[in-house]
Amino acid sequence: MHGNAHRLDSALLGKIELSRFLTLPLKAYCRFVAQIESSPGFRMLAYHVKWLSIDGALCRDLATEAAPASLQLGEVRRENGDLRFVYDCDAFTREYRFDEPRLEQLHPNRTLAATLSRLRLINSRNRLTHGVIRTLLEIQAGFLTSGDPLSMAPLSLAAMSELLASRGALPMVPDEGRLSRLVRGLSFRSLDGKHYPLRTLFPSRRQLHCHRLDALIKVEKGLLLAGRMGHC
Image (tube, rainbow, N blue to C red; front, side, top):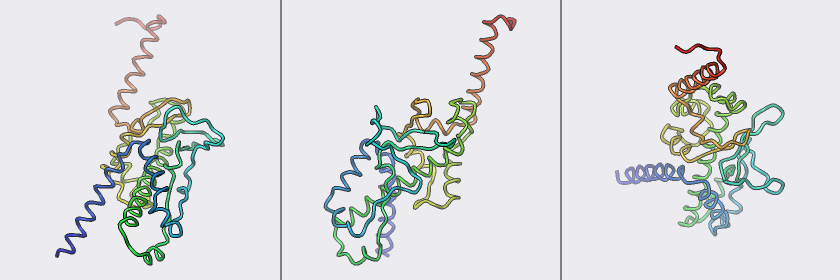
């Protein structure tokens, strides 16, 4: 009984830790990843962990490109007619692969356990982020290409959660609460260089209705000013 309770407590603590980790600001997150990769625990795992980039994730080449004026998640680009997302920092694309059989042979200690836990958190956040970005590039391609709010599709966090879950490629349940914590502090640059909160790409039907109403009012004002529409 006590053993089961301890496992439940550990699982609950892990969920709480992940929830907090998803809200970490971008600059703090970059520092966190750099600190982990320069830590004694990471050096101890050198032959047991490979660090790569998530499949399909692109990162800005700081050797050939000027650093952005302000750190954001990244920017939308067009390459060969397709939309691509390029991350500002390679910490956002990091994925660690573990040699589980060799890890089991290591003598367990707190340093190793803490390091492995943090590396798995990085994996979880980055894979969830990239899953969200890839899906947004598909669903909101019209807006990301044109910049016209009227071309956006309605999209809720609940709908995004269902889409990600149906693809089955994530190490955690992409529930609405986790998605909300993740996207809350993220922003990106569009094709024309404008900055948008990532939350912009999750408009409700009511918000889209307001965009259409605003557009209609602007058209009517233009017609009135041009003398092409009579006053009521």
